[in-house]
Every structure is written in C-alpha cells, then in structure tokens.
Length: 334
Image (cartoon, rainbow, N blue to C red; front, side, top):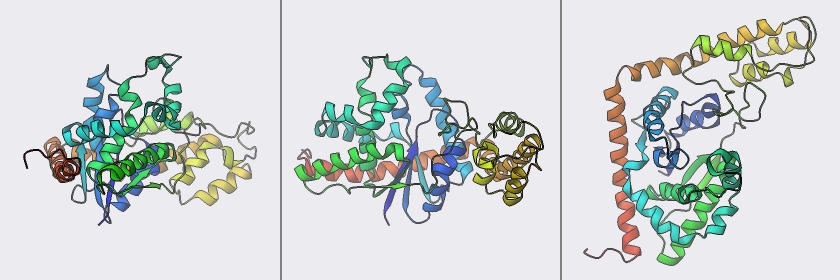
C-alpha cells in the first residue's frame, strides 16, 4: 500500500475552501492508502513565532475539524509535527542539500513574503531562517514517512518540486533511501470567497467555517456578492457572476436548475435566494457538525487519537531514520 502525507498548519478553524479543496478528497483516499495527516505546529511557528498560544490552541481545533470532516482514526494517523524529532533531524540534514538562492527562487515563498510585509518588512529584511527553510521542513515531513503521494493545492506545487529535488540529491549521494513523491492536485479548483475573491481565506474574512452556526452562516451569506446589474427583485440576472449561485452549485443543491432558471428570468429575488442557500448550507454541514459535537464532548478520545497517531508516525519515522543513518555512515555504535 502506498503512503500519503498531507496536513495543515494549526492557525485557525477549517472552512469550505479546505473541505472541497482537500478534506473531501482525503476522506475518500484514506481507505486506499497508508495515510498520515500532519498537524504542522512547527511550521505554523514560522510566522507565528511571537504567538505560540495561538498555535497550541488550534492544534485541538484542527484535530476536531479533521474528525468532523470524516477522517477515520482507524484508517488515518493524525499526528503532531513537533512530537516527531526524526523530522527535525532530517530537516538539518536536508538543509545541506539546497542553496539559499534556490529557496529564494521558490514562487510560493516569494508570494508569501509579499503577503506578510507587516511581519518581515517591505524589503523582506526580516525574513527568518525558519520561514525561508519552510520547504526543507516540508521535505523532511514527507521523507520521514517515506511518502509516495502528497495531495496539495496548486500553490504548493513549487514546494513539492523542491522536495523532489532534495530527495533525488540525497539518493544520488547516499544511495537509494527515499521514494520520490508525486503531487496529486484536487479535482476541485480553488474555492472562491463570499466576496468574489478567487480564494476563500481566513485573512480575507470571506469564508464559511465548517463549525459556523446557522446565525453566523446567515450573516455571512446575506453579505455575499451577487450580480451587480440586478437592481430590483424582478430584474433578470446572470447566475454565473453571483456568489450565491456559486455556493448553491458547490454544495450540489438539488434545486440548482430551478435556481438558475428563476434567476435568469427575473423570478427570484436575491434575499430569497440567499435564505435558501443558508438552509442548504446548514443541511450540508449538519453531519460534519454532529461529528464535531461528538468529539468536543469527548476530549479524552481526541487526545487518545492524537497520541496513537503520533506513536504510529514515530515508529515509521524511526525505521526511515535507521536507514538514513546507515546510508550516511552515522550509525556509529551499531
């Protein structure tokens, strides 16, 4: 059985963008692969180093969202990155296999630096070693479970290519040690935000969280962008430029043909359409939130799942590390 490594940084609750962009696919794939799901608390500290409490608190929230979305702890190992010292050790070894200019050329790193000017300054002079070396740490996470498959969004493809470069170089120098992983893109394109932005994002405040209440969903949907050409209730509109229709389509509302037809013919007001979407979203999220409530009421079970997932990952990482040290001639007393 091939191995999958995937995960998220614990910087906040997960939203519909995460669900359709990755979680839905992870739930399906976990039954066909040896699945490791990373809670990347160390990587979260690269730009939250001054707020460790935020990272710690969100480890539990992220675990709850995983379980609520349908990740089965009997099929997947959910683990905490900082509790796998082998990944940290591999990061050190891999740091010798990639140059600083190569790290700076990474397109995703360039984009993220531009987005975090308040943290690193306009010139980027404040970029930390940890932030710049994020792709090296990611390569170590993949390598410590000897991953074959890494499901990612298209923005992460440069990081996976960098992982492949590092592992190829390691294998060339020290002998065949690691699988060269393949990136698997989600079949769902990037999910748009309620404001029409091309990306649903916590920082843009344009998302619906998996744990949102009906009241929160209602407030957000009522502010969603619709066709600006529709002035009056009976005006015909173009559903393809309306975010309300976009979300009807996203969650596969069975009334979608009717929604589209009535919108185009001026037979449907925006407020009515938004209220229908609220009901549809609440219904869609109900099983997810029901599972979340189950685990929220059983914190000891969540802790057990994380401990067992971390233990299983560490056992795998120890096996990989024995082979690494043998190939690097670092197994001094064996």
